[in-house]
Figure 1: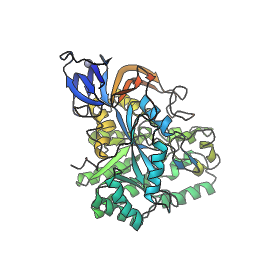
Figure 2: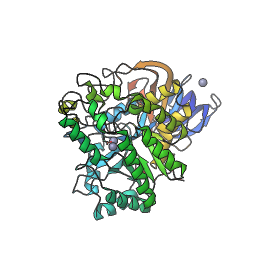
Figure 3: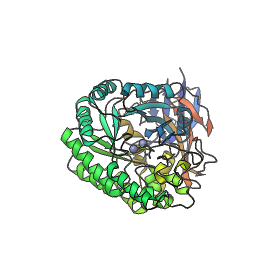
Figure 4: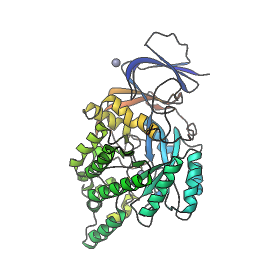
Length: 463
Ligand code: URP
Ligand code: ZN
Ligand code: ZN
Ligand code: ZN
């Protein structure tokens, strides 16, 4: 039996802030007590005086080793989960992929094989359904039963992951029955592909045209359509990577009608913009992702949505492609730039910066980054909080430390940073994953294979 005491920090959860000592036993939080009030014997004592003690981050949207755009995202489960730990994230939910014509089971088995024994932190899976048919609909029931309780569908990427409205409706009806949660990539991919061809015919091939053809109105239209289909199906809906203010407005309207509709945004939409996509010399390719970065004017609606709870979750959509050799596939044709950005290491810090800047309260930071993603995807209160019985996934966070983000110092296996040179206040100091020190005073002390596959329950945000 290993006991650890984390002493003297300000424990911040979504529910409260309290100065407390935290006792960890056998990988779980055993007790919280007024600082100094208990003489707990422990093998390990971590002094958190002047620091925050927060739940490990839950990043509900990552793509490790994801085959996409003629290549594959360049973080493995090993490198990606280490980088996540460095940034204070102790659970990822990655997307297993069904290949067209294959069974869901094949895709899920393949993802288990990639991750098993390689992760530094705990992990779970969603399933990308790219072929909705009688047999995959049946398979969805089985997956819910074994802890893969959410399914991503795409209204974008015709010919790749795209589902038509009939397929979407059927999958939603099934999820309505089996307790699964449909996650939607809401962009009108059919219309976007027309605009892509027209832009290329006009010779508009630079990265910034990626942002121009993937119009905010086409995100809003798809979001609206997804909401109506979910309403008809009687199923809840979670819209991933929301970037357009018009899409936030659709979510707000639906929620005001009382519909169980949820939205996620990502740090790149909160901190970056089309100005980055327009950087000269093909630099803009670093910022190509879908939904795309928007003009700065959209950011206020995203921050407002996070405060008003019309957006509930911030995930990274971590899907890194190296500039050299991968992003470069799209020189001369923006539609061939692999879509996706690195970010799994910086979510907690960027959102802490939002606390410093006055966009969010401390408790809301923890709610959108830890507690709500855990509840949304059936991991609460094992993950996402600090309470007796919860996994001891704890971060000692120094709110005063200054850092400068750079590819030279980050731990993601990618040759650039989307936040190169950005100064941030606040930094992760020590990270425990189920009581085991993964980061200790800014040293990696974890091990591949410590991270365990974590089956999930159904969405707990509805009740
Ligand atoms: O550009 C992105 N978002 N790449 C990852 C795949 C997806 O649609 O989430
Ligand atoms: Zn204090
Ligand atoms: Zn997507
Ligand atoms: Zn994604």
